[in-house]
Length: 305
Image (cartoon, rainbow, N blue to C red; front, side, top):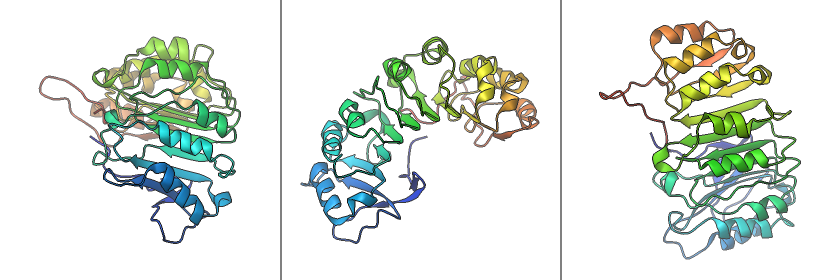
C-alpha cells in the first residue's frame, strides 16, 4: 500500500490547498502549501505570498506539501524559511512537513532536513508531523510544549529513535513512529524501544503510543503485552504492520492491554480464532483490513517504498 491521498484534516481543521490570489481564511482551514515540480516559484516565495494574503496571527496550523522536487532537493530551505518567519507566525501550533502522496513522491524518496532551527524558533509548537526519513535530522531537542510528535517513514533509522529518547518533552501526549522495513532504512529491534526509547518507562504525559507500519510488530506486541506502564495509556497503535497470531495472542492475554481504551491493529495477519479473542476484550479493538501472507508466507507492512 502507498499513500494515495493528501490529508483532509489536520489539527482539528479541514485542510485546504492554498491558491495565490484567492481569499484566505486561516481561522477555518489548515492551508497546504505546494510547489509543483516545474514551478519557478520556490516554497520560501510561496510562503511570503501566503502570509501577505492571510492574517498571520490566525495561522495556527500549516501543512507543507511537495517542494519542487522533494526526491532531489532537501526540505532544509523550507525549514529555514519557516524558522525565519517565526516572528510573523506567532500563533503557529501545528505543522506538517511532507504531506505528499505517492504521485508527488514515494515516502522513502522524500529528502528531509535538520529540525533544530525550526524547533528552537517555535517554542510553543504543540504538534509536529514529519513525512520522509531520508536525511532526516530530528533531535535530540528540548521542547516544553510539544504534545504530539509523528514521524512517518518507510524505514525509520534507529538514530531518530535514540534522538527522541534523549529529548526532553514533558508535555508529550502522543508519539507515533512509522518504522517501515529494513530495505528502506529501518535498522532497529525490540531492544531499541524497550531499552532505549522507554528505558525509564513512558513519559509522564504520554497517553497514545503508535509503533506502526512495523515488520517487527509481533516482537513489539509481545514486549508491550508484558509491560506494566502500557496500562497507563489510553491508546496503543500497532496498525499497518505484520502483526500475526504470536503477537496478537500476547495482547489478548495481557492484563495491561485490558486497561486501554483503544487498541489499533488494522492491516494485520491475525487468524479469525485469535481475532475473536481480541474482540472479547473490554475495549475498542480495530481489526479492519485483514491481510494474507503471500505463497511464501511473507508478510508486508502497509507503507514502505
